[in-house]
Amino acid sequence: MKIGIDALSLIPGRTGGMETFFVKIIEMLGRLDSRNEYVIFALPEAGERLNLGYSNIKVHTCRSLHTPGLTVPFRLLYEQIALPSLIKALDIDVMLFPASICSWRCPCKSLLIVVDFIAAYYAEHFPGKLGIIKERLLPWMIGVSARRATKIAAISEFTKRDLCKRFAIPEERVEVVYLGTDRRISDFAKESTAVELPGSVREPFILFVGYQHLHKNLVRLVRAFAKVKARKNIPHMLVLAGKEESGTHDLRRELDRLQSDSIVDLGFVSSEVISALYRRASLFVYPSLIEGFGLPPLDAMACGVPVAASNAGAIPEVVGDAAILFDPHSEEDIARALEQVLLDDTLRNELVKKGYERISSNMFSWERTTEQIVDLLERLGDNSATHREEVLN
Image (cartoon, rainbow, N blue to C red; front, side, top):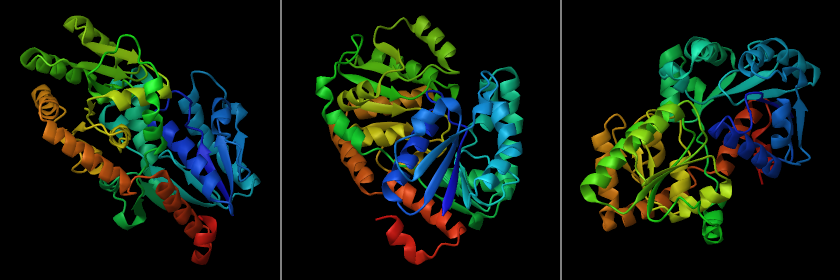
């Protein structure tokens, strides 16, 4: 069977967790599925990132989309106008659309993966015309896509409920396919003693990893940390690691106001440094106002780090009972959670144990994610279920 994958939304270094999702799924398809053939439709700048050298996967670069500054609108138009003809010309049997929007006139059966509606919740975080696109156009396009796709998958129960409620989609049309955590990150972290931490970082420290979008709620986090520092006189630093984004301006303004040498904003750092930070952190904190999933808490658990996380969006579903939850809208509740974990050795050890158990349960593995996706694609392609073990062995 010839399966197409729409990766046109991937812009390396700019699409956060979606980049991890694309790369890991393609890697797993290359390793696990020797029966089917895959064609990935990608932007020129993403072609090299997605070409992982597997014989069953080809990257088709859509060079006409190389228009700096107009990527989003051009991509959306391309998916609706040009991509259907390309799908037909390449004789694709089934299409996978992993980024919430599909080609409405797709000439073959399709699987749509819906990620989240963060843009609809927080459109004010995006300036000018981009805000209008995020607030009105994208949610509408997701709704139309959900009605046109043959089958839908959501990356969490939270996203499934949100999708079904917003667009009156019958629940039986939507499968939940969880994302995975990279088991190798814990191996990298074990080797991280050879990696020097940035000079501004000293142990012990609390860690946040993620892009600095406004919905990541970093201003409340640094205020909560400042409260804990003042009233408990803890020796810990707060280390923020992640690329500058829509929330960076407000974060920098708050850091300037606090004038604290115990808060370090590293910005973007390499994966090797991230692994070293995970391994040496005393606590990982994830204060997002909303997430369709949330991979970093799982990565922290894989590295043996206790987690305190927001009780919003899909985060409670992801972390289960292996994290202390807090109200992300309350600086005081965030501060309470930080104090609770940092000052209670028994609780901290219990969270580490539960984190390892959650990671070891195979609920969140890229192998399982890929198996579920292939199963859905094969059912759409009318492949016999008896081929299942042959495809994923």
